[in-house]
Length: 206
View 1 (cartoon, rainbow, N blue to C red):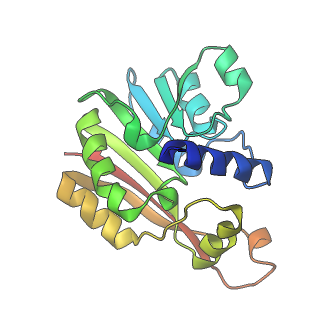
View 2: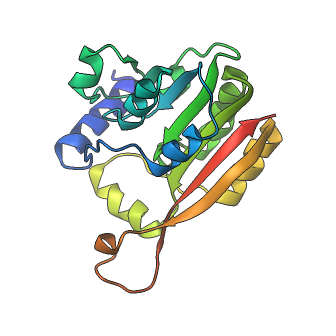
C-alpha cells in the first residue's frame, strides 16, 4: 500500500514534469524584505524550497540554511557548493529543534497545506524559532489561481489572510509587516484593473 507521503511525492513529481514548476533564480520580494530585519549570525529554514532561490539568497548573505521539500528539485549548483542542507521530507515530518532558527521562510507554500494542518505547523514553527525570530509567509488567495492549479493534481487550499493572522497571534506571534500582492499584467491578459494574487506577511515571535 502506498503511503500518504509517497502518494503526495508522486503527484508533485508529475506536476513538475507537466509544467507546474518554473525555476526562478531571484529571491522572492518578501524574502528580501525579511533580510532587512535580520542580523548575522543565524540559521534559516526554507520550507517548500523548490529550486532554492530563497535558500541561496540567505546562504550567500552568510546564514546557515536548512531547506526542505517533498520533491528534490533543488538546483544542483546550490548543493554542489555546499551552501544549503537539503532534506527531502514533508514539512510536518521534519524534526524541529526548539529555539533553533532565526527565521523560517515559507513562500508560496501555505496554499498546499490542508487547513487542519496549519495550526500544528504554526505551533512547531513557533517552538523552533528563537525569541524574536521571524516567520515569513506568502500564499495565494486568488480563486482563479487556485482553480487553475487544480489541473496539476496537487492539493490546493484557500486560506483567509485574516484567519492566518489571528491563528498566528494566538500562537504568540506579532505582525511585523503585511501586504496583498497584485497579479502581474502578463498574468491577467491585459485586464486593466488590479487583481489580487497573493498575501505576504512577516511575523515575529514574541
